[in-house]
Length: 261
Image (cartoon, rainbow, N blue to C red; front, side, top):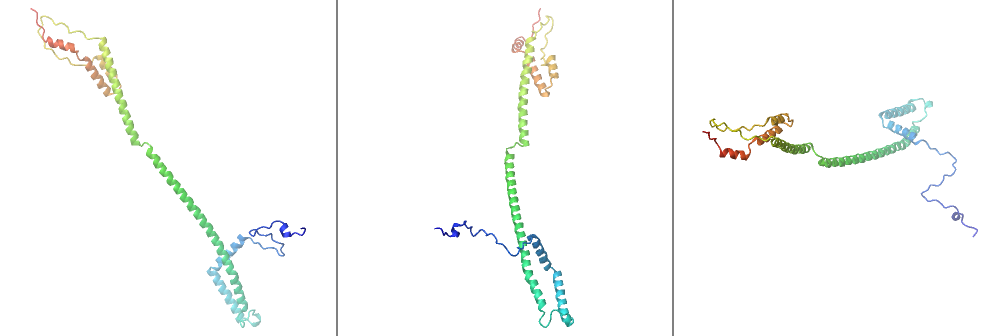
């Protein structure tokens, strides 16, 4: 029981998805700035895809080959007899480094493309959401405007209301004028017909024109209700000045007065 497995009794091990702590290294770990290194590789990759790079590479190879071919033997550093081994090595190194640099630049470009595509997708979604929102708002405004009274509707309603009020005022003014005129006639009743002289010859009965009294005319002229009210007042005055039915009956029974002897 004393000898227990230290692996079992020790602290619980982490899962495989958790990286272990790095042990002490003999050499320091190189961790260059990824942004600076990526910018340098992209610059080199862009330069390799230009005509200037091809021109300078052609000049470099031509000078290398010409020097090691036509220069004195003691000054040559790459023998043409063995096929320019140094030049082949240099070109191989250049190609071996160029491929990873191009891949790194391509990866960075792919990352930028992904970010731009994501932003474009988000922008398109926002634009779609804004468009749908504006569409709903416009539909709501149209529905709300259908319930709002238009100018023509308001004008027609106001015209009807003005017509009703005008009719009511006309009726009130007509009743008021009629009541006032009847009250004046009751206070000052007309006197009976004056006796005719005995020696006078019979005269034809002239129809008396129905004219409004002076006070009625003054009241009509001083009224400020307009021509319609004036017309109504004249009609009421004419009705008041007409003779009573009893007077008309007496005049029909005695059409002429007999002269005395």
